[in-house]
Length: 346
Image (cartoon, rainbow, N blue to C red; front, side):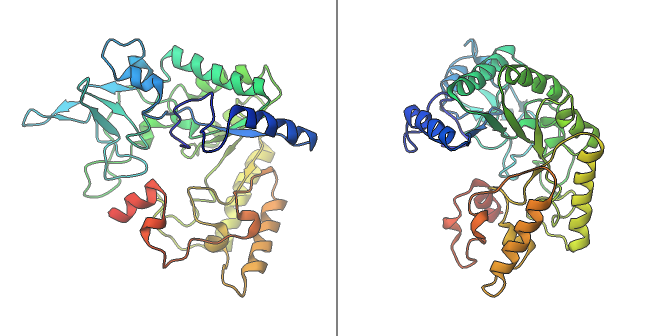
């Protein structure tokens, strides 16, 4: 439920029905508002009918809809993963999951329950385009494209270099994100979107090259804007995970804002302005002061900064209330998050 989609054309019953979505879109329209939807198409649920077919046999027509590999063999003759990539949400685990039925591995960068789609397959791309049309025809105005820089991968699947000392599995984002056909795939999506009046924002955490950014969101770009993670990486050690910490000051934050603002102004792009999301701490706790004494003032200060930057502003749920981080005395069981749980186990 959420980022492991088992049916792209229906609603999780806990949330409602398609009729509820139709009513929501209609009522929003009466108030001059529109509905923007999250679209998760780098991977599906392992319960999606596509994957259930894909894993059923080596000869199934949907076998190539996902990324399957035989793997390697260790000195004892046992199968081991095709390379040393680790999972994004659990760096101690392989990004490959063994399937007992067909005796091969499937790529699942985020979770074993979220197998990656094979965008090299034209049928997969056509199916995604059909999903986009389904929701746009229903009245959705556009999409946030989840980890959309992951849809193109280097196809020889090499081992990743060591970034985490002493660990076998290593981050493979150099190879499974921002791949050689990313622009082509995004242009295919844009061709569909051009049939409608839409808005798009792409989540692209591994796209940092300025030329690549402008190719994506400039005048000839495929998306209207992308989420750049420069600010969210402000207090992380360079080259380390989000769990690392590096000292910073207001001048560092200013330099980041100046860089991203000037980039879009000088090269005809458009910013997606945000300072927190579901993968990061609350901005009030992280960048300001969430104490009872200063909480209100600090939240208003952050809001003022956020609102005066150039671009389209995005507010994460609760940010408008000045919400702060989960209390430090809560047990780890209260953190309903794969990544947090995995890090706690390290």
